[in-house]
Length: 251
Ligand code: 5RP
Image (cartoon, rainbow, N blue to C red; front, top):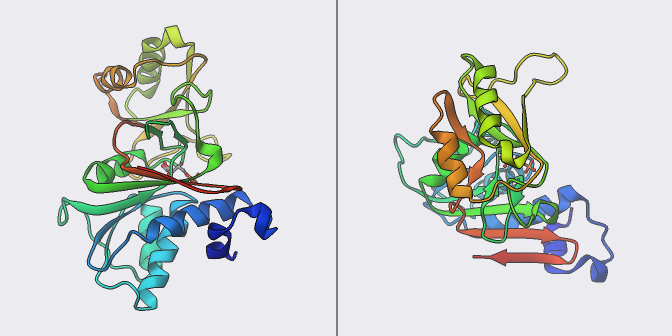
């Protein structure tokens, strides 16, 4: 797409019909404007973050960016970045990241997020919590009033051992919110989806809002067998939302 043109002008004036993927690309390209030479950059995962990785690689190839070190948040992003020639490292060597750019499944007005419907929540949270800046990039469909009450999945990464027991304990924690849960499956083969870390994912669905997010987070993380959950509370430092009417930036 003529992403730059579309980013600059509302669709109604440019008479371009923007797809959801166009909007993701516009948000991603806008965020990459904040990447400067010499930075350590966290590389997010998903169809939106993929555009940011493509753009960083393009700018490196053009010589417009230099000396970037990428810290990928998943094996998929790692493979994409390697195929594009982006130099990579990890948190062991770079415990402080200058800027991470990543997508989200839901974003509330306080920049709290649900992430992990793509399965990479643990590495994403490790990288994003080590980042000085974390720019979230989304198309407008991801904006919600409250996370954890949208009736869409809130993923929780669990160890495979007795996952059904963990599922039942998670569901019973949120009985008041009409919670149900299911083990995430891999495609149509009926087998459990396995994360990059060798774990499983339980998707929780809530009939009603879960209320205090920090309390919900603490309660989940206290359960043995739980590795991490997909609520990203207070981690994002800015948000770029691409919509058909243009771009909104929130800090
Ligand atoms: C992966 C994620 C993704 O950032 C999230 O699922 C958004 O993906 P997409 O940009 O494809 O909509 O959290 O674990």
